[in-house]
Length: 71
Image (spheres, rainbow, N blue to C red):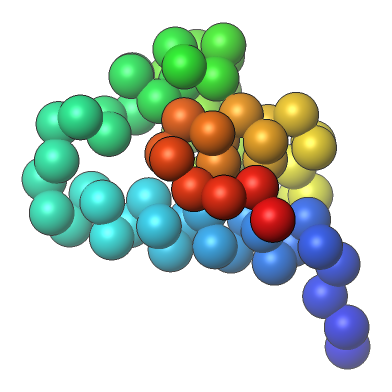
């Protein structure tokens, strides 16, 4: 089964988040990332847990906040 762009992008965001969390880097705490995206920390945590497709604005905001290329 072919994955959609949104599914692949969310997998990358989750892997990136897990990597940053494992390094205990306070610069990339959920509270800070959420505020950079313009959502609450609980919304970010929920988005990282859910299996549904995220919105393009969430993907763009998260990539920008984490300093990752949007492509």
